[in-house]
Image 1 (cartoon, one colour):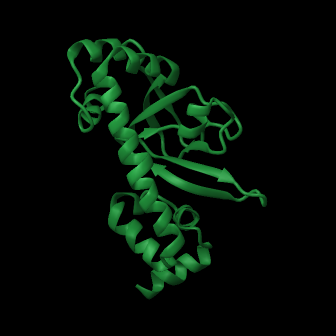
Image 2 (cartoon, one colour):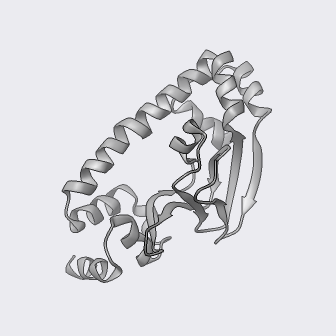
Amino acid sequence: MTAFWEFISRYSFLSEESKTAWSAFLKPSKIVKGVTLLEQNVVPKDISFVRSGLLSYYYLNEKGEKIIKKFFPENSLVASTSALLKQEPGFFAVEALEDTELISYSFSDFRNLTKQYADIADFYINYLERHWVIEKEFDEITLKSATARQRYLEFENNYPQLISRLKLHQIASYLAITPTQFSRIRAEL
């Protein structure tokens, strides 16, 4: 649990009382490579912290091709956030790309904690602002304006630890290019 609390402290200081209350809802689990943590078109219930392993957040396009939107390595929270907030079936699925250890908690229970504990609410606000406003806006602008080569160089710069853990077609999917285009870009570098 130490890694979880260290992650939370990057966004907000929590009192021992808040940690104790939140701890009552934390559930450790393991999933093996290839297992889907969250299916597409399902109403999500939980948020998960990645203790170890690697997950992908993807959807299937009209051709049935897997389009990867994001990767979630160690020390990150994974959820279909908009589906959680709306309590509607999610557009995205989450799959384990490696054997993965998680700490999960119910979003409903968490929301109740944010009403009872100001420091947990502060964490929630800070986390959402950083990841779902600041980073998301930058990612969307980059995806629409940068060339495929620029997107790859940005990926390589921001996530060097993931390059050796991913298959080429997974990186290509994330970059919104074909594996052939990706091979050409890598050959040119």
